[in-house]
Amino acid sequence: MNKAVFLDRDGVINKDGHYIYKIEDFIFNEGIFELLKFFLEKNFILIVITNQAGIAKGFFTEEDFLKLNNWMLKEFSSRFIEIKKVYYSPYHPEALIEKYKKESFDRKPNPGMILKAKEEFSIDLSRSILIGDKESDILAGENAGIKKNILIKSEYNISSSHTKYIFSSILDLFNNLTSKINILTE
Ligand SMILES: [Mg+2]
Image (cartoon, rainbow, N blue to C red; front, side):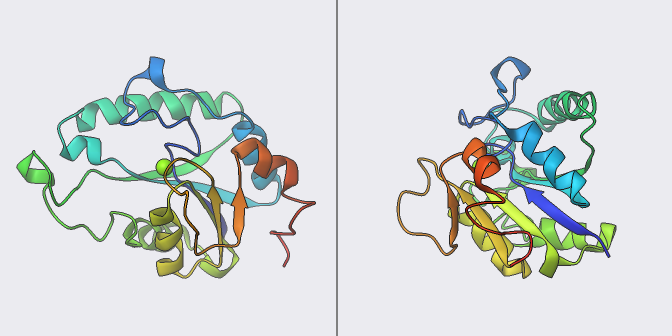
């Protein structure tokens, strides 16, 4: 069985600029490459799970998303960082575009994307970690049975959180991962 790090995209991998879909607007968060290399060295596999309601709302197309996604994966692989798979949910209950209008088990806080990855890559969720910047990410992790759900502080989570693992930024997480908390072994 594999252990995985589940990564939200906007606000975790890149700076969240609200419905990012253009390469020129996609800015990697400081420390993200170092953080992911650290996890790879500890034998975690990397999985991205991202809600992309901008598709449902007509702000950009699924094709736009995939184009940016391919570019992102190339940026990672040029730094020897392998992302096993990117799962995305284009659905939203109040979508403007009819084919994306539904309550989806894949849309976080539901655990659908995590459970699909678990099957596809034989992941032991009890040894896995999730990193998100919204409470819906943390809840998706909890709903899937992940114990170590890390919240990166953002404008979306000013109130209290379910999780005890809270960091001010990706760089803060990287700098304190092994000293402040022993998230890998506790
Ligand atoms: Mg996010």
